[in-house]
Image 1 (cartoon, rainbow, N blue to C red):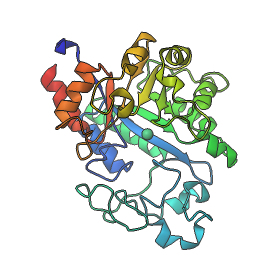
Image 2: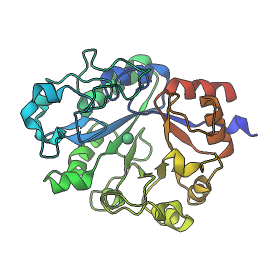
Image 3: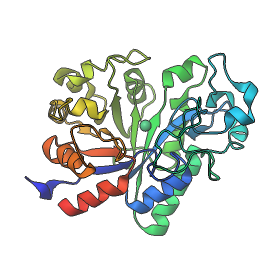
Length: 315
Ligand code: CA
């Protein structure tokens, strides 16, 4: 084992989301303190075109929107960030993720649902928090923004990529040497970012564990050596689900090998100590498999401190 070579990149998935409600500034401050290399931002737009940090286009699984604005749901019964101005979203209390039908927490062992004084942050508020902490602590953490459902946003008359890119550039995230990876699940948008929109920073293609995305992205093709070689013309890395990296029995699928042959970095998602794959008994066993056996280059983790600790021990 060449353990001295191991320097996996630790990405705080939605912040220190194992300990605090996802995508709150509190969760990001904690992830920074716990030593994550990158803090993730999932981005959606408000009605007034402000990028806010939220995992879903819906807000009924992480906020009290259904009590505060009961008449604002769409015919499908869901509440959408895009139907609210930033001022309205700022009146909501953010909670640990819950099932909107029952109100029960998704992860029962985590921060209590429906408790605490958390709010939805804007992208700018979050970048200023991270850059402020970088300055005050002297420890640099990067950003890892994800453009959420750009195809859907455009169908609704909003162009999320066109709004987010200038903000990233204004805050110093513009080239491949800046501490930023831009990520997206839509191949059409990844291509557009590189060509039409002129993004010069690092770019990661996320790979879902379904055959096809809502926008038409063919994820199966992105599991092949040829597909990844083609992707490498525009992207710097891939973000596959763990189910694409290991088969049901925990055997590496070969995806990392194909990606490395195409010179793409591989940052799989997601490590959760309270939802481990069946083929491992502990987080440490998963890290060993991921970084030593499969040779992945990093991991999105809800518990970034565990990866940081493991890395320090094996270095
Ligand atoms: Ca994400």
